[in-house]
Structure formats: structure tokens, C-alpha cells
Image (cartoon, rainbow, N blue to C red; front, top):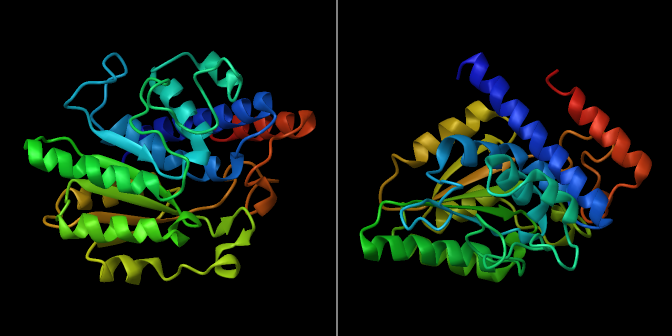
Length: 276
């Protein structure tokens, strides 16, 4: 990947991270940690990989995206705003009673949201259903999803994994955001779901492991996924919770709280300094 494209993607990801901070700060609540860890994946999906059009968000031929870890909606909203689905100024209305940007994605209220999510495990199940629907329709669209590593402790995730492999859903690509932390602590201490690679392989998936913050590795993994036939692909993305904001990185306390005035200023200053 050439330097110019990498710089463009880094700028977009920085803007999305700024949007996460803006939203959670003004809401005085939300989930910044896990939102920041998936910003690079969302950047590449929406600006390079997926066939989507903000001017026609319900296009039947579009690729679909499902945020299975729905509590990280601030990242999805910031990405959609950056892509042009709605004004960036809307991000400051996150979780407000009259806003279309609620605490979890709402497919009926927010342009660009393909599935309402929040109850962990439901999103990947819905994504598998969307992929099967495409097969029945002989449609070319692909379905992408992002799962949380804590979410992978849900039994429904493994039912969906079994379902997707059984129906040979090679039009389904999921990322597992492996930042190692969930609301109550380290995933290995709360309810150890590892090793993810061996589990998904055993369930019949094609598995790729990457650095979630390398655009080149994200691009290569998605290119590889397009060559896979007869099985879904799981991209295990090793990430840093709170990525891009020094005092949030790898800190479980930032799973679900908003920055105060001073933290907000510091976070924005750090992010705006990235890549400059």
C-alpha cells in the first residue's frame, strides 16, 4: 500500500476517533475504549472495502455491515458521519432523547445502520442470516461484522458460527476485536474464551490473524477473504482498547465511561497530533 493511501486512511481513522471522543464527551456516557479499538477496521471497511453509497443507504445491492458489539456505536456513528451519511455535528447528540444516535445502533432511526444491535451475540447471528439471504437471492453483496472478544463468551456466537459454516457462507466476513478487556476485567479472567483461532477453525471457518491497527494487514486479510470459497472468514484482530488516547489505552475502566472536561481536551489534543 503506497504512503499516500496510508496517510489518507490514518487521517480518516483519526477523525473517527475524534468523533468517538466528541460523542461520548457530550453524552456524558458511552463506550469509548472498545470504540477506539475498532476505528481502523471501520475506516478500511467503509472507505476501501465495502460497496456502499451514503446517497442511497438502502440500495439492495449494497454490502451490509453489522456491529455485533453494539455498545461501541460511537465508532460506527463517527464512521458513518465521516462517510457522509449524516452531518458530523450530529455526533454531539449521542444518547440524547431526541437524537437518532442512540446508545446502540438502530436500523430504523439512523441512516447507514443495517442492523439494530446491543444484546451480545445477536449481531453475528443476524449477519449470518443476511449472508444466507444473499445466497438464496443469488445476490452479490457481502456481509461484514465486528464481534467483541468478551462477546465471544456468549453461546449464541457459537451457534451462529456453526450455522455460518454449515451453510457455507463464504460471503460473510467477521472481525473479532481482540483487545483482551471487557467490562469486568481481562477476558482471560472473567470467562476465558481463548484460543479463538482454534475454536473457529474447529467450527469450519477460514481464520486469519492480524494487527487491528495495520491498514496493510487489514487490506491483505480482506483480499484473502475474497478468495475463500465454501466457508465464512473470521479475522482475529489483535487490538488495543482505547487506541490513540494514551490514558485510555489498555485501561479496562474506559470500557464504559465518558471523559470529563480535562480528559476530553487531552484526548482531542493527542488525536489531533497524530499523523501531523
